[in-house]
Structure formats: structure tokens, C-alpha cells
Amino acid sequence: VPVLAKDIAEPFPTVTLDTNAYEAAKLLAGRRLPGLIVIDAEQHPVAILPGSQVLNFAIPRYVQDDPRLAQVYDERAADELCAKLETRTVREVLPAKELRELEVVDGRATVMEVAAVMARQHSPVIAVIEKERVIGAITVSHLLNHILPQR
Amino acid sequence: VPVLAKDIAEPFPTVTLDTNAYEAAKLLAGRRLPGLIVIDAEQHPVAILPGSQVLNFAIPRYVQDDPRLAQVYDERAADELCAKLETRTVREVLPAKELRELEVVDGRATVMEVAAVMARQHSPVIAVIEKERVIGAITVSHLLNHILPQR
Image (cartoon, rainbow over all chains, first blue to last red; front, side, top):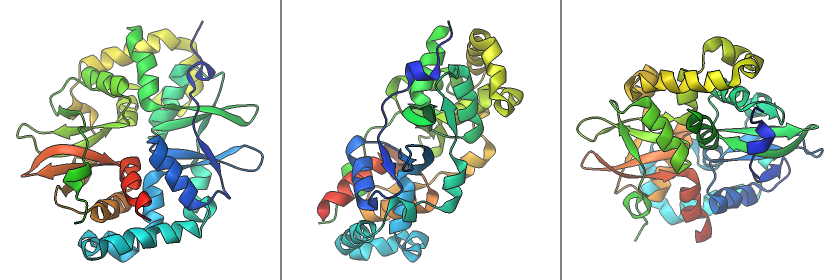
């Protein structure tokens, strides 16, 4: 019997498009995750929100272009960053591009199917769905854990 | 006193360009990491090896293009994947593009500088160097953990 995606999917925190961006950032920080799964009002997955995107949104372009500028206003920068996130939702932080690119696998997909999707998408995490709802996620390291020992 | 990169850098497993690709994959699987830092013979960081790249290298293109093909040869596929990795080095698995794109920060960079670099690079992890050698790494969630509670 082949191992299926639903067998190895792990609980993964989700946020909605209307979740406050600061709350999303705290979830990323607290759970030590590289990203969050974003779902819509019907619990359908619509995107992955990478932690780096939260920073990309919150940090002014001119500081990104010359990170040394961040040195001179360190504490104020952190305050401004948080303030900017607190007034925004996940929807506003996500680039439109991300909303179209989410790849999901069905719970009945085999681990090798999951590996193929992950490889093609260069994605460190894939959402697993059953009946259009997110039941968990599979990270690349978790997947490798299941593929490699078979040898 | 501002918090510096060296203060929050965490130990992070490294591999060299000559590390066996199968050993690198096992390290990714065992440590539950999204990627590894690749160093050269002088311990200079040269790239991040994402776990998805290991899959991208090992899984044939025609399976990536139609993941349903993976269903029909599940166990053989896992064996072939491991066999392919065992005969290769990290150098062979890394695309040339990745070798040029590694961003590092100096241990004396402030956390806001690290955030700015991470934001620009859309990277979930940044290597921290002192005297050109890797002393650890900072993940995006670890960084958010240090920025957010300041408010």
C-alpha cells in the first residue's frame, strides 16, 4: 500500500486573507515556520505567505536597497515595522502573484507525486487538501524523511 | 546597545560542494530544515541548497511535468531517486544560478539590517559570517521573534 499525502500531512497554522498582518507575523515568529497557509472564507487554500514577504512588505524599499540605512534607526525601524503591519491584512501583504501560484495536492496523492509537485514548484511546503479544505501540510524535510529510509 | 546578527545567529548545518548529495538529503530530512548552507574548502559560504532543489535534481523532468506518472512506479521511483543522489555531489545538484546568489550578513550587522537583506532576497534563511567564515544562520521566524516583541 503506497504512503499517501494524507498519511504524512502535519497540522499547519493557517490564516485568512483578512487576518491582521501583525498577528500573522507573530504566528510565524512563535511557531518557527518559514511560511503560513492562507485560506479564504470557505477554507480553500489560496496562497502561501512566506515570512520574507512580511519583511518585504514592511521594510521600506530604500532600506532594502541599502541595508546600512537600517543601522541608524534600529529601534524606531522595528516600531515602524510593527505599526505598518498592524494596520494591514494578510491580503494587503500578499503580492497578487502569490495568489495565483499556490500548489496543493490531494490527500490521496502518493508521496512521490508530492515530491514531483514540490520539485517543479521549488516550494519548501505544500498544502494537502481533502474536499477542497486544507487538512495539513507537508514540508520538504518531512517528505525526504519518508522517501529516503525506504532504500 | 543594538542586537547584532552574531548575537542571534544559531548553529546551522553546513555541507561542502563535495559532500555526497544523498548525505545532504539525509541531513535535510533529519534536521527538519528547509535548506543547508554550502561552504567551500576555506569555509566560505557559497550557496544555500534548498531541499526542493534536491528533489528538482533527482526527479525526472517528465514526472515533474505530470506528477500522476509518479503514482505508477512509487517504490521504484524512491529507489531511483536515492541512487541518483548517491552518485552525485552537492556541486552537481546546485544550479549555477544559486552559486552566485547567496547573501550573507556580517556578524556585526544589526537585526534590522538582517531583516532588510532577507526582505530584498526573499530568503527564509541568511548565513552569518565573521572573518569570512560561517558562524551560524538566522531564519526569518527567528528574526521576527527578535523584532516583534520590542514593541
